[in-house]
Length: 222
Image 1 (cartoon, rainbow, N blue to C red):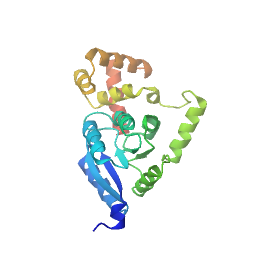
Image 2: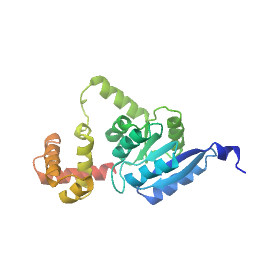
Image 3: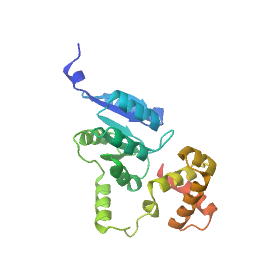
Image 4: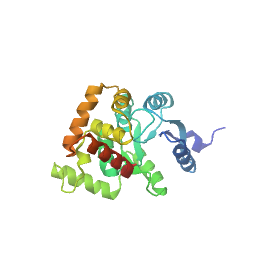
């Protein structure tokens, strides 16, 4: 017979392309009597399928996935399953992705570098329908939105669109233009256009500078 806790257990789906990270999250969540990991996925399509099948209360999503992108997944889950709550757990810099994640439909963002005990706090905050961010990120977003423009000292990367940032990340991971086009289901010409936009926005003179900038950005941001 099911216990009371089992009957009322909150169901959590973990979407991350690193098996060891999924195992670590599962082990940590399993220590909470009222929380349960109901499934795992490592890419967008598998995640969407499991959200539909398992109807989780919360989905924990990484930004970088085996195929697809975490921000795109958040948007698609919000469209198909508007009641499902989402929390981003990522190595990427919070100032670059947290606001994007919230605008896409997530309720919280927590860095993988944050102390482990804060993860459960983030989960419970989001399950209550409240926003979870670090105090520093909350202050950053408020200042940015109040100003209505790029603030002094703000990284130029923060001015990039979600797609431009995705292309920059793939460049930094050493992905060729053709492979980026295939990965994003776009034409090579479109990717070349994105590369030109990136050079302009990041004030870079040529493709070599763009490639070096992208590699350095990936190294510094996960």
